Image 1 (cartoon, rainbow, N blue to C red):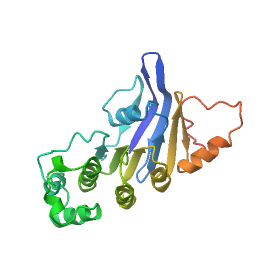
Image 2: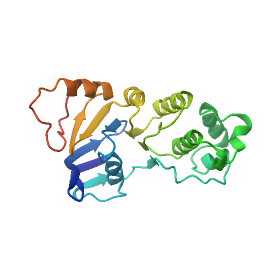
Image 3: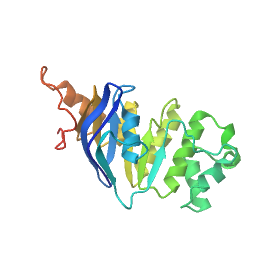
Image 4: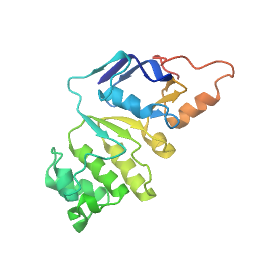
Length: 225
């Protein structure tokens, strides 16, 4: 669905990532993790074509349809009702939209509230519902569960588990990472390393790495098993 070949990105003298190659296949559940300001969101934007890499290329498949959940949720129309806002994404009948919203805790008259009246957590649920009915085959999610209560997190996790397409996820939510991710890309000090497992698997592999052996520059495309 998407291939990056030896991409790099710098800000001034600081290298966020370099010589990074990555293939995203249909059905993948790939998590990108690292400390704040490690370059995770920048990498997402480069992969989506919203920023250009300093070097290297990104090729996106002709049939790729991206649904992007940014941290700011700036694409929501605050004047619309919840129902109208989700239905505006197209791709689903109103009965299907109502069923999805019910799963995300919008039931009864709550679907007629304006988006502008909603809390931050409720807006995240609306934004995710829009993506799920939009026909996107790749969901790109940047910290989707930040500042959310447990009930909302669980609903979002369940909705994402039921999604049949590909997921590219940036998060600090360890429970979400372990529940959803099947591959984990760790960005650390300008280096990216891919692990063929969830976050807990990646952490265990990192703990077992012998001291004194540095991480490889860029991404080991054979992955760490």
